[in-house]
Length: 351
Ligand SMILES: Cc1cc2nc3c(=O)[nH]c(=O)nc-3n(C[C@H](O)[C@H](O)[C@H](O)COP(=O)(O)OP(=O)(O)OC[C@H]3O[C@@H](n4cnc5c(N)ncnc54)[C@H](O)[C@@H]3O)c2cc1C
Image (cartoon, rainbow, N blue to C red):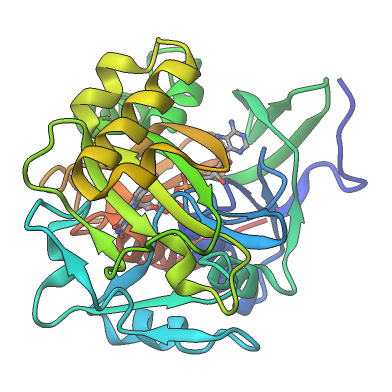
C-alpha cells in the first residue's frame, strides 16, 4: 500500500476526525509548533456540527445551536471572524420536553447560533491547518514504534502519534482491530466499551414556502410525543430565507426502532407527528431531505473525566478524544477533550 504523504512517517501527529474534538486538538498542537494533519471521511469539517446548503440556504441538521459555560469555549465561539453571531439563540422555546443536552438551558449556560450555520465555528478552527477530507481510515495497526493507518482506496499513513477523535463507536471500530495482549490498550478498550452508548437520531429537513404560518418559536421540545425529540425552526436563524425550514428530529428510542424502515416511511411519520403538534401545514413540505445520525449524541451522565493516552513500544502513542471524554458531553466537551489531549501529547516527546 502506498503512503499518502511525501514524508513517511509523518513527522508529528495524525488526527483522525475533523469534528470539534479533532479540530481543537489539532489547532492546539499546531500552536505549539507540532506538525499535525487531520484526516476526515467527510467533504467538510465539523462532523456532527453540520450545516448543509439547500437551494443556497444554510440548514443545521446536527446540533442546532452551540452552548456552554466555559469562558474559554465561549470566547472561541465569539471569535469567529466574518460570521453573524446570533447571541442567545434559541430565545423562543416551545414545550417542556427535555433538550438534547440537559444543561443547555441552565442559568449559567450561554447559547449562540450563526446566520451562516453552525459550521462557521469548525471552519474557523480549521483555518491554517492541514486537513485531508474525503479520507476514510479503515484500519489501525501497530508497526514497531509507529502506527499505520489504512485508508479506503488503498493508501496508508504512518506516524508515531495518532489521535482518534470520533464517536466512541467509530473509535472502537478501529481499536477493536488491534490484537489483544497490550495491557494499557486493553484498559482503554474496556473503558471505550463502557461509554459506547451514543443514541441515534433520524432527522427530516422540511422546506415550505415562506407564506406558511411559520411558528412563533425557535425550537420546540414537545412533552407529549414519543416520536419527536425536537423541532428546530431553522430558517429563524437565516437572513432573508428563501424557505421556511423545519429540522424535525426523532427521539432516540423511536429512531432505534424505525431506522431499518424505508426512508419514505419514517419521513412521513415525523411529518405527520409534526402536523399533529404544530399544524396541518407541517405535513405538506415543498421538499424534504433526511439525515440518519447513527451515533448522534450521548445521553449525559456517561462521560469520562478526560481524554485517553495509550503508550506503546518505542514511544508509539495513541490519543483518544471526543465528546464523551469531558464532563457534560456535547460540543463543549468535545472541544475541551481535544484541548486537554493536545496539552498531554505536547508534554511528551513527539516525532
Ligand atoms: C441531532 C443532534 C443533536 C445534537 N444536539 C446537541 C446539543 O443540543 N448540544 C450539544 O452540545 N451537542 C449536541 N449534539 C452533539 C454534538 O454535535 C457532538 O457532541 C459533537 O459535535 C461531537 O464532536 P466530536 O468531534 O466528538 O465528534 P464528531 O462531530 O462526530 O466528529 C468526528 C469526525 O470523525 C470523522 N470520522 C469518523 N470515522 C472516521 C473514519 N473512520 N475515518 C475518517 N474520519 C472519520 C467524521 O466524519 C467526523 O467529522 C447533537 C448531535 C446531533 C447529531
